[in-house]
Image (tube, rainbow, N blue to C red):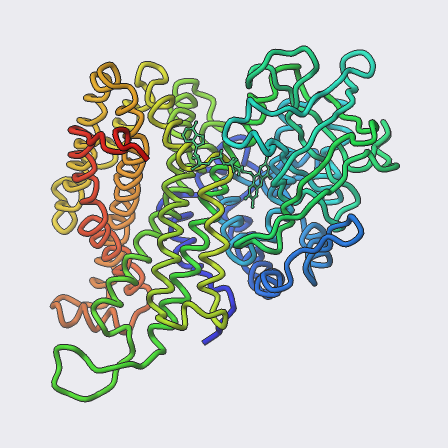
Length: 614
Ligand SMILES: Cc1cc2nc3c(=O)[nH]c(=O)nc-3n(C[C@H](O)[C@H](O)[C@H](O)COP(=O)(O)OP(=O)(O)OC[C@H]3O[C@@H](n4cnc5c(N)ncnc54)[C@H](O)[C@@H]3O)c2cc1C
């Protein structure tokens, strides 16, 4: 058993991409017409090699060595700089980016798989390319032609990296309270920036020639709050109009955080313009900064979910391998003194199937969201585009908060499966758990995501986004309600969906009567919604898997339960499909029921959290 090696579940990735979503169908869209299925398969296999051969070996080293601030410069863990060079040269910085500027133009759905592989293998490393691609996307969408010419190609090819700079000591969730300011230098484009940012991921390092910070600041005289914020392109080293890198731009790393996890990622405190010489360029229009930043953050929120789906899946693979290997005790129900692997103990099996069903459910959720994003940008029919945009918009806070909470719980359960060995550093489980915790905090804490879902997304278009999702859910479930083997699962998800709907329709009255009590329901509502959507995904997967399993059984002439059992022993494909069905059964039977207790408590909510005098 490999104790630190990243274990990839290629089979399940292929299942989601090809059997559930139909990645190949995206080649019918004009945007992806130059690709074929063979290209996608090749890219995925190359990415698996990069994840397992280039990145995973550096994960533990990074955790142990951490980043260091030496003479004002950030030193990355051993191996990161050459690995980043190799990674960029192979074109992995922006699989989804515009090919005109150095991206590969691949579907976002496939990019989610690649991100899962890279971030699962080495989360700290992946911040470098992922933030760069995210910053480049904002430039692409909102930057002037001149800015695109100057910044995009070096970023999408990884010569320069990118950051997002929002947080200040007094302005975390309340980003509108930030005080970094910008003073016009000439005309409308060049500004002098002054201020301090904290917690900036990949804020400084020597892996690239330059770092392009996207800094949220307020132009002197602009209104207070988020509406007065503008976004600035602030390079670490000045860049002339021809794109040549010059002298320092007065961006100083004043401190490096010491953290619980992602220790190979430099989390920096940055001072802009301490010597009065920090120049930034206004990105897009003045006072539109928060709108542009949201664009970046929406993708980053999906990325947080992927980070957790990846850690959850990696934890499950490790726990499964360990449980098969570790011999301990005898079977509880047998008089035999034969010692068995812990995977034979019912409680360990329960933990493992909890991990499998949740982690595969999260993977499905995130790929589904990305597929909607691909359809939203690739289709031409306006109604269809709106439908998929709305689904994505509604589900984004769930992709972020549900996935990061549940993914964290999966990593914790992984430690439980290993017992004491899960707690020690010889095995990667404890690092997975420490590394992944951050995802529930950054890109808007999960509490803020819940408010976004309940307070904003559920109200958009007069509740139209939720109605659209109900329609999508009904459309996918109704035809299978009488399925011979899985009909009861379909009906259970349908019932949970209806319970969610009932609560939703009761909310306006609660909101009017007791607005604070209504707000208090945000986190339980998000959890319940996540359960239903993930159950839906798992049941849809089970329907596909059951069909494939039946076909395999028919081909093998396996009719009796004994023959089918023997087929599962002998045939890894049959085992895989059966595992998908069991995962759906488990989730519906053991995780989804929480929706009903949450729905009940949200309908007659308890006020103690508001009444208590702390
Ligand atoms: C490792 C790491 C990397 C980071 N990377 C970046 C980066 O690259 N760029 C960047 O700009 N920032 C980054 N951050 C900052 C991160 O986004 C913030 O920490 C986060 O936004 C929360 O802000 P805060 O820490 O000030 O917490 P606070 O805002 O003080 O929140 C504390 C608690 O109060 C709750 N809370 C606060 N306000 C409300 C409210 N109005 N309603 C309900 N609940 C509320 C929160 O949900 C949370 O539970 C990073 C942070 C870390 C630790």
